[in-house]
Image (tube, rainbow, N blue to C red; front, side, top):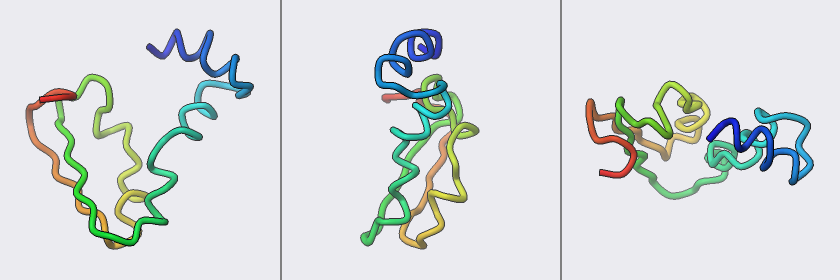
Length: 77
């Protein structure tokens, strides 16, 4: 997926690199604006959106976000 996004998606939408493309579309950029409680559920074996790739500090910075991490579950369980 990263190869496709790097060679096609990021370029076609005018981003200078893959990281800029991913950062722009990441929901993490919107967590500061959340005004209601939010529960984020993720799994350690998620192959598409691994918890290590999440910006946890940015997600919980507003005090309205709780993150629940399970050992298993994959991406869509």
